[in-house]
Image (tube, rainbow, N blue to C red; front, side, top):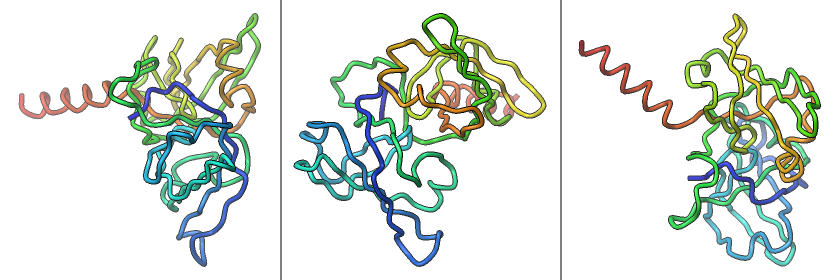
Length: 209
């Protein structure tokens, strides 16, 4: 489990194929901030751009670790297949503060950045989410974008998807990779877990009445 509070900015420095074709996935080599891996061990879960991955190799002296990313994960996410900056969050401890919201690290869908404009000292981020996720998105609800827990400021259902607007304050822009987003870029989205369970319970109630 995670909270959506980014704890470090990493960088994918290399990827190597796990087999002879794309169906075998990739081994991803990631550079972490100095000291970030001091308490990490093999088998730990670390969310990379919001996708929960298992540490398969670790070099604390070089501040590097590796994860194996399946072809399925590569197909359902963005930002894990090529060198570049990534958001990192280590798994939640039982006694940690829940600063964001409960996040599983399982990407529900890929959205597209449709707007990224300055509004005062902040930036207004607009994302077109898949229509299938629209039922889980609500005004002042939570959503995870590339691993960062954010508050939805508006929701508009459109034929082509669900348009959401999010305000990114200077701290978020400085402490995550979101400040470097580009129009048309794909982003990993995870909806609020509570919304998923509410839909399931309401569906069960309807089926029995």
